[in-house]
Length: 366
Image (cartoon, rainbow, N blue to C red; front, side):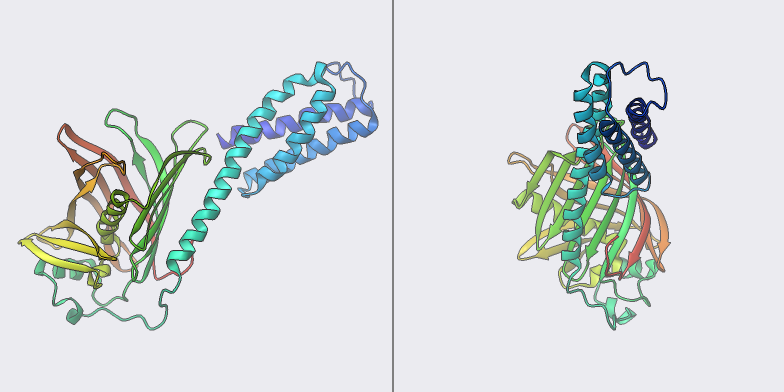
């Protein structure tokens, strides 16, 4: 779709050269029956250059390409109005360019917000003389949790303070709805539990959805926009969203296992293969059960989580199954997982994801 839109910009630019050629009598342009003065002809030429420049910037993935496109579009539409009889159909590509440009502007604002929030959660993180985790550091934990940390390679490695990662996968909003591919980036503060998750979902052939899920100071915030402009979900700072964000953080500690050593986590054995973890932030607590294999790998996580953040939402079982493992930075993590709501009317597998990149103790954003 990017190539199609870039092609529209370039073809629209070439069409504007017809006005220039007509004004300077460089070619016989039968499509333009009205006369065009040379000054107006130069405006047609200038507009063509702006559209070409906007196409180049678009293909180079410069975030501000839409600024040039909007300037070109405004001049173009004025010229079309002046030659409405011959040029009125040029309004159609201008409308397409306007819609995509507005979406790009919305995305620019959205990404600027996310960048600011990501820097906020990473600030004040210690960066010097990070401790190396030893067997003595994990001796107070339940046996199966100790084995997990040893198997994953946490022991002997630096304590994890920050995390940044990239994901890809598929999601759906209802059991009967189609799967939608997505990509995402995420930043974690592990010392003061917080995260920012940003995603782009291919919901429609041309228009994407952008989303941001957030936990900061114990408060959750979820924002999803269609075309980066129209809010589809905007829920935050209520107890149900807060609880959901905290449960998510608890589950996703599997990607940075040394987090389980922090004082905000309390462990209690359930049986020989599982343990219950309780996360507490600002006097608010959530719990979930981690289950491990005999080899010490984490195989699943289960917790009660509010099914949406609406007033009438209820606690439902939320289940994460680990489907694959990979070593990043010397630590073995479950890099593939599937997430399912265990509802009374039937299981609803709504998310499948894969970690494609992961870095620890990097104090800058993507």
